[in-house]
Every structure is written in structure tokens, then in C-alpha cells.
Image 1 (cartoon, rainbow, N blue to C red):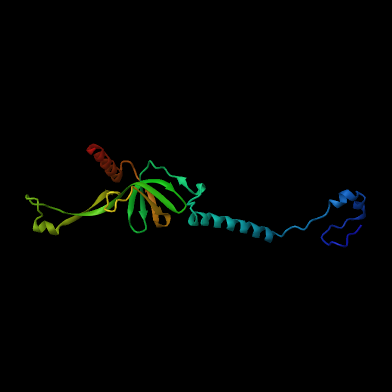
Image 2 (image 1 turned 45 degrees about the vertical axis):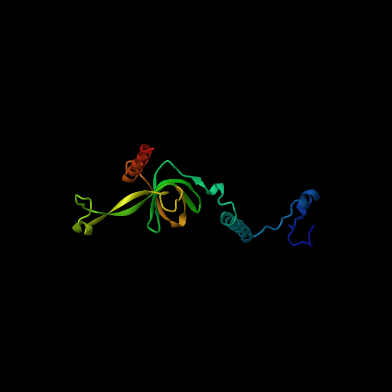
Length: 185
């Protein structure tokens, strides 16, 4: 038996025809999709998933997927170095794919002070020319505009972060500040 109407069907020899019509009918070879079509379909699915991954947090009220937000050890102090040269010290509360949430924030500010003072408490004329700049640790929230003690930093603005040692000068200064606040209350 030879099939002439459909060229994609398998042609059988007369020996195979003896197996019976039911078994021969199941021996057809179906055309297979080419590997180019398979890879094209896979690529399309990947592109659609990545587009959803980008568009949903940026253009909908749903700002992050649970899989894209992960907790950070908030009990450790960290230094966050920004691209503009600013350094914040605090505890990272949460990290998303496009932002870092920092709480308990401190930063350094250079304070200019004279080197010597006279007995009356006024700077002498020679001491006015001699000043020094000291880095001072400032607690976020004491500024004129009264920000909260939490900031959201774009990950594109972060150069790197560092964990701080508990016996480091910055952490000791923070602990002294917190201790002085507790004593004044």
C-alpha cells in the first residue's frame, strides 16, 4: 500500500502491511518543527517575562515582586558610598532590584573650628587664620526640613557598601550618641 495524497506520511513495505490496518495507521511520522522555530519560541517567552519583570514595578502600583525583594541583616551597621561622594552610615532594612532602604542614618559633615582660643573665650587674631576641619557625625532627622530616619537610595547611585566593625570609630561614635540621648531623657 502506497500513500500518494500526502507526501509527509511514511511509506510502508508490503511486509509492514501484514501487521494490520490499526497498527499501520499509528505509524505515521508527523512533521517536526525546526530547531529555529523552537529557539525562537523560547526567546519570545524569555523576552516577555523580562518585559513584565521590568514594566510591572516601574509602571504599576506594585513596586516590587516578592522574589525581587530580599531582607538584609538589619542588625549590622553599614557604610553606603554614593556616586556623588556622600557616605551614609546606617542599617540596611530592605534591598529591591532598583533601590536600597536605609534606616538609623548618620552621615559625616566637616566642621571648621579654630585651633586656639584666648582666656576670654574669643579667638585671637593669629588663631583666626589657623582653623581645622573636623569630620563630625550627624544624625539624619535633625536638619531644617525634618526628614524621617529612613531613606530610599537608587541602586544606580550606590558605588559600594561596607559592613562596619562594632569596635570601629564610627560605630563607637554612634553608640556614644545613642547613650547620651538615653541619659538626657
